[in-house]
Length: 226
Image (cartoon, rainbow, N blue to C red; front, top):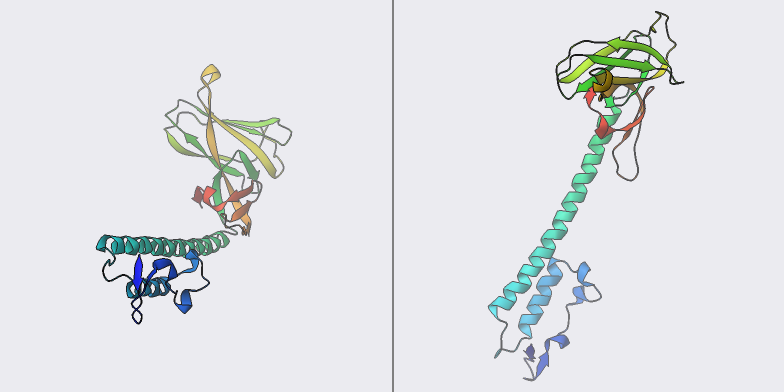
């Protein structure tokens, strides 16, 4: 584009148009709306009056700026939203300390009130079987719960083995299955355990909860709060 010098009448190319002081030394990524408007005004002042900028060209430049400005604004909004979400998650996680929650796990703690969990049945079954093993992998108790409908089925172990002897407190492995014999199918179990502590991740990930006898789990892995 050619520019007309108001005093001499000479013309100059758009590359020779002097940038406003505020815009000098800035990269394209650093220019803001004020810089953009100053550059547009300078371009208008130095354009060739016999070949003015086409409306389409002007609208194209304006659309590009609006798009870039909008994307930048959206990014800032998302960053603020993510930070707020992180704070909310931290507060929510801290409020769970001392409460019992349920997570998908087959490791469950046995305490003075026994052991509780949930078996998730994908379909109706004529028989739900619960098998409990100790740390050495030895089966200590088998519980037959009979016919059950599809869905979440709560179960409880009183801490006694198959001989009626009381087992020591600790972590046990619980397997749930439906059917019998060759038609037996394993199903998912949810473990109930108290939250003993919370650790906040510096990289923005979900807070980690330490569950008594069940290990560490992220906040978003909690299925139920009791």
